[in-house]
Image 1 (cartoon, rainbow, N blue to C red):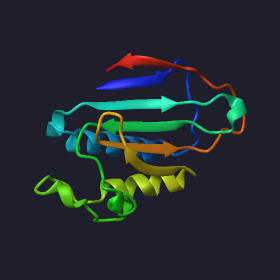
Image 2 (cartoon, rainbow, N blue to C red; image 1 turned 120 degrees about the horizontal axis):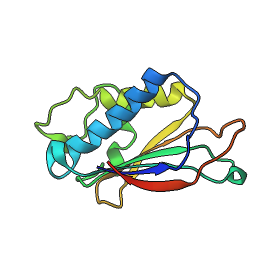
Image 3 (cartoon, rainbow, N blue to C red; image 1 turned 90 degrees about the vertical axis):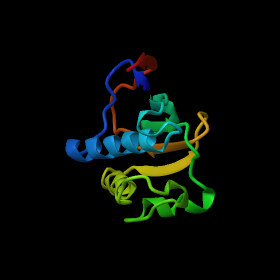
Image 4 (cartoon, rainbow, N blue to C red; image 1 turned 60 degrees about the vertical axis):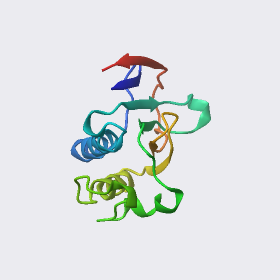
Length: 142
């Protein structure tokens, strides 16, 4: 797993168990739907824009699987929805619905796009912090 993490702390106001649930579900989903199944590569990045940009931190989770068809991109965040390609893979279709729920509770937006790894990229965009220092990013290998 590769992680690109900010050098300093990134503050996101919220309920820690909900933030953890959202992050865990995104990472587990990426690992499960990568090319190699549960042991596929997952890239995690926390992007922080300069304060002048007015954007909040973003969590990006990428996998190298088949991705999510454009027609399914909104639907996969609904409870019990599963993309047609998952076939016999385990899951209830609740993980991404919980991600979307927790994003909303934290004032964030979540979307899925195409990953540079070839699969899916999930982006959680948090609101800009009211005040405080912003960090630059560094790369870490986990």
